[in-house]
Every structure is written in C-alpha cells, then in structure tokens.
Amino acid sequence: MKLGDPAASLVVDRAGELTAHVGNEIGISGWAALEEADVLGFAELTGDRHWIHTDPDRARAEVGLDGLLAHGFLVLSLITALGGQCYTVRRARRWTNYGLERLRFTAPVFPGDEFRLRLTLDDAAPEPAGTTRLDLGCLLERRNHDRPALVATWIVLVEEA
Image (tube, rainbow, N blue to C red; front, side, top):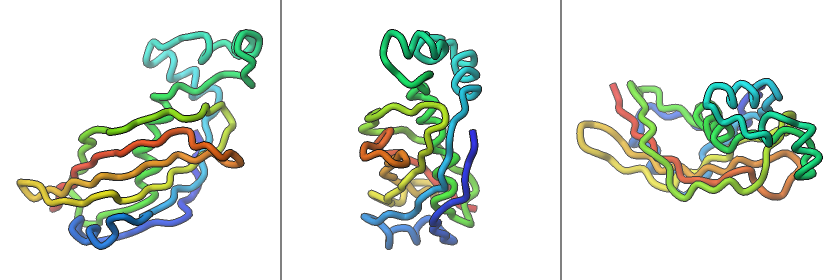
C-alpha cells in the first residue's frame, strides 16, 4: 500500500479539547492506493481466496470487473493508518478500537484506485478511568468518483498519560 501525506490534520494536547470540534470535519488523510500484491497477500492471510479477489481474468470474464476486487475488510483495515493522518492527541497513552457502527461498503476498490479518508467528529465524551470516547464519522472517498468506498462510525477510546 502506498500512503500519501495528509491534506489536513488537527492536533490537540488532550482528548477533551476535541469537544470544541464535535460536528466538524477534523481531518483529511493523504491519498493512498492498494497494489495487487496487497489484495493477494490479504487473501492468503485471511483465507478469503474467493476468485473475485485472486483471479483477475475470471473477475473480468464473469463479472465484468477491471481486475481484482479489494476485500472490503482490507479496505476497512486501512482506516487506522489513514485516521492517524487526520488528528493527533499528543498526551494520548493508548488508543483502543472499540468498534464500528453503520458500516457500509458502498463502492468497489481495485488495485491502483486512489482513496483517502475524510474524518468528522460526531461525538467526544468522557468515560470512566480517564478515557475519552470518540465517535468518528468515516468517509473513504475515491479519487474521480462520486460514491465513497465506505462509510462508517468508528468508535475509539483514548486514554491519556
């Protein structure tokens, strides 16, 4: 995978400072792209060797695709790296992926397609034990396409030092 430089990034010292940004876009990652080797490697790693992800000739012939289709879960897994380009909490000691809500794979991603993450802060709420829960709206847009590759709400718990 090739990751580009971030287009915009929000930096705060403490997670509580993010409450001022609730309802706003907090960052845009740089453009990224998957290579065919990434898709094939993910197929081997996960055991999801469906021909639509591993046999470009069959994908073209039987479905009319341009080649291999990237796994939705592969595309989803990139959110963490791309999200790290969108915002930073300097005093964060630990981040925990708490889950996802309303995840939808809305358009295909093929090797060579460029995409980037647009991240909005839907909510920021203090939790017990000094953590802050962030509800992050994720839109993975594709260059030169109207429909995003995925949309989701990503829930992250931030523990500060």
